[in-house]
Amino acid sequence: MAHRAPLTALLLIFPRRSVFKYVLYVISVFITVATASTNDVFSASHSVNAATARARDIRYLLYDVNPPEGFNLRRDVYIRMASLVKTLRKDGDQDWVLVLPPWGRLYHWQSPDIHQVRIPWGDFFSLPGLQANVPVLEYEDFIAESGGPFVDQVLVLQNYAEGWTDGKWEEKVDERPCVDKLMYSKDKQGYYRGWFWGYEETRAHKVMCMSAQGHASILAPVLQGNITVKSVMLDRAETVLHDHYAGKDYWSTRRSMVFAKHLRFIGDEFRAKYLNSTDAGDHTVYNEDWTRMKAELGSAKGGSYLGVHLRRKDFIWGHRKDVPSLKGAGQENPYPDEKAEVGQELEDLKRMLPEMVQFEPTWEDLELLKDGGVAIIDQWICAHARFFIGTSVSTFSFRIHEEREILGFDPKSTYNRFCGDQEKECEQPTHWKIRWSLVVPSRGQGRQRSDRQEQLSAASSPWNQPEAAQVQPHLCLPAQQGWG
Image 1: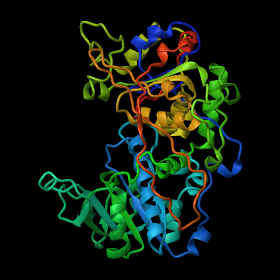
Image 2: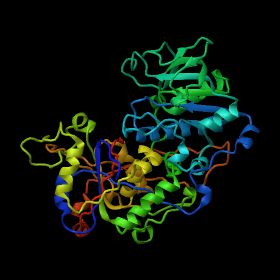
Image 3: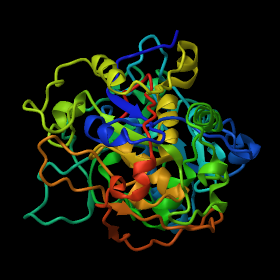
Image 4: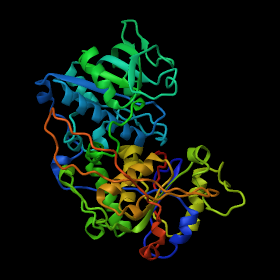
């Protein structure tokens, strides 16, 4: 029996026929599943060579994010921290390594009776892929290398209490009193205790609050000059901004976040079995070594199905103007399902689309994959669809946009979203065009910044394209729907 848990979003895939026009009004959902690659060197199980690391004079940068933030926003913060490490390695003479914060205790991971703390990055991503961009280390490897579960100093980042001075925004960073209650407390030995990703034995020697306003690189002088300890943790790392959003460096780090091989393999198997979708037939051949992959824009065709990501639950009341009801536009009551359980919405959806196919992991599979793994599988399936429609301002949809951009899909087939039932002007997502960089710098070198990428409109809907009429509905719904 497949394991089911409360859903907060729906995932759909549609093969060829004309029902899709009906589906366009009726549903929002998102796709799933992961693919596999052939190069064993880029497997998810690889980790940093600890002996080599110990032989170097290393400084460690750790970080964490505001607890309520979801899986996909945390992936975005990783890009900011990777950029900071590149700046530290380029501008200084120290060998900085980024320590990957273990996954766990996320709001959207709501599957019951599943242990979801202390999850290493290698369960979800290819560590060699990350390593090809910036030196990284799993947290437990950091403990082994550094001599124990100790962090020398924690900097709790925060906004300035007074906001912008005279309405003027400027980059600055200062040690300040803590604005919010400090989430660390001293024990009897004088060490600071905190969440530390579920590692109760981890302790910090010093904790201080720091107000920061600006891009991630604004912290580099502080870390290189004022602070000389071996390991520094930035808590609330989402406070600082991207140094070069959508530039070559951003895309290099984003491309390096290759999904773990076993997750991509499961996704590819599902595509082949239920959607008649293969990389060869879909023109989405994938190179596990991301540094050697460069797909031309528009070269990917995708499988004969429609991928839809529709956020439910918190988005229904948090973004009610942007998220349609299940029955779509034209209702006298635009939100008839607002208080309904998502499970009931799923049953209604099955009746509307009897051809629906659903990716449902067994309880044993879910225990192994975790909610995060199932989310990645969903995204991988959506990334290979002929057309994709997402949810406004959802980072889950944003990450699918990026995957499809990397695979070479036409922007018109990717940057689309569902509109609210009463939304008069439905602006479509911005196309942030990929900036390719195939040359990876050697250790200690940084990349040059690139200009902010131009914004391209993706207002033209794929539903107005001649080929759209050939796509017939084939629905795929994941069992776990809690990822934002």
